[in-house]
Length: 424
Image 1 (cartoon, rainbow, N blue to C red):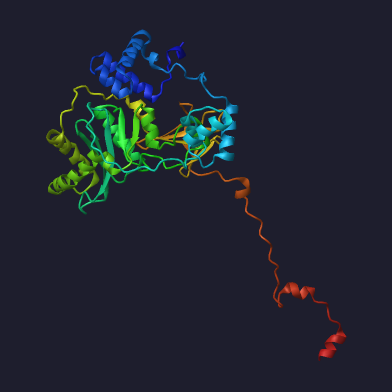
Image 2: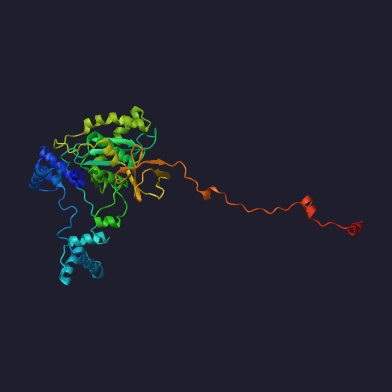
């Protein structure tokens, strides 16, 4: 059966498979793999043996879909939260856990209580972040971490339209990949990332700031709180779909490598564009294609380790399915949906209340249900209903004929001879 060869794996497990394969190919040492995966070298050897015995499916979590054997009963959780609301509402998790054990005989970890309270939206006990600046060493491998940001600047010095430079810089080698766009948004981010992947492959992690393009400002829903997940932007969702990790930078100094890159380019690149007489966005991007190889040859540095941790680039079809805008739309009873002010007619008969609209980078639109493409065409004009087509009956205006109208003369009573004599 086809389903027997299908293995459900998370993005973290896919990265683990990639790193373990690098160890098996002797491109990465066991100690370095342990640092990348957050485990010991001994655990790395266990993972290597498991892959040799079971293949990639051996790294899938064994407890997926099974309840934990050490879970706390739901009745105990309900009692603890009720006691906290009633007596310990202003206590921190550590002190509250101590009092629960001392006064009520309920023993549980302070971190467990902290997690329960955070899911319920209680976070008054959170510590205030303190500013700290520390030098961080470069990553050892190319593709291990890539910093991403957009620079709003007068790049063309008034000769052309305003534009934004979307730039990627490898943390280990300072190799740069960049492109100009008319704004910094989701589509430019997806297009620039697709171009990076086609050129170098999939990086393990992307380091970006808290711009709404990369980090969603929405509050987590109840379902997300129960699942322990956070809202994702379209870019973050697309990056997770291809197995990448999006790391948020809490300050500009945290991603200082790309910030210093923009400072350099705002000095050197602007002068190069001026000398070349570039005045349009298309000319600027063509100029970048020739300029960046020269820039990288001069300013890129050799990484500490020779192995490249970029994962192989997916096929064009896989990239287009992942790196796109995905929106859920309600399917009406007449099998039509509304999207961006336009009506679309679904050709296929599906038993669903919602479908997914995928807006590709090249502007094409796909409508899917559970991953299956649906036949669709745009409705040029909405059909007019019978009630709208039938004009509302107008009230008839009362007509008053003129006094000399023949109709009025017919209505006047005939006068006798005595009336005529009286008039004379």
